Length: 211
Image (cartoon, rainbow, N blue to C red; front, side, top):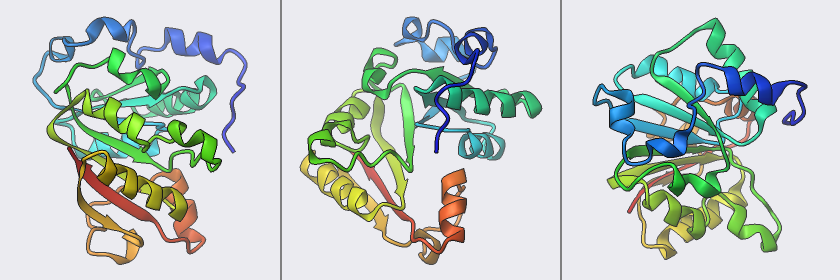
């Protein structure tokens, strides 16, 4: 269960060097902000940051931006970063609903969605990070042929996501209902949730799409 109330979390985040300040001002100018020509990839709902940090270690030629709306969760990632700093990892505290206010079309190379909240009630479908509403937002910031990589253990959410992608005009490059027993496992980096679910014997679903 995610901790959502940590005393002093907002103040700690506001002062932390790994948090990108005034991020809206960089819209359309992210390459100037970083100043090194490296591509940008983002994870939405990055939790405690394990996945993102491992990706940053493996790929120092890419800038990774972790997006998390809960301050108390983001604090945990920042604490990890202070123990093992990485120059190519950065954080934004924001709600993904407003992501198009932070990036221009073509500024993001790839988006990772890992074990997103399933929002199981039918009336909440628009809140799912793989709904057509969110897919449209992602398309407004991704490069041409930029990809979304989505993993979940929730079969209902996964089936919904596959259908939404197709209905919204996205191309499904690959999908599997059992990633850890598939040909697509090579190079996979696990999140905290994924490690727990795999240990419990749960199947992990994955899809890769582009517009």
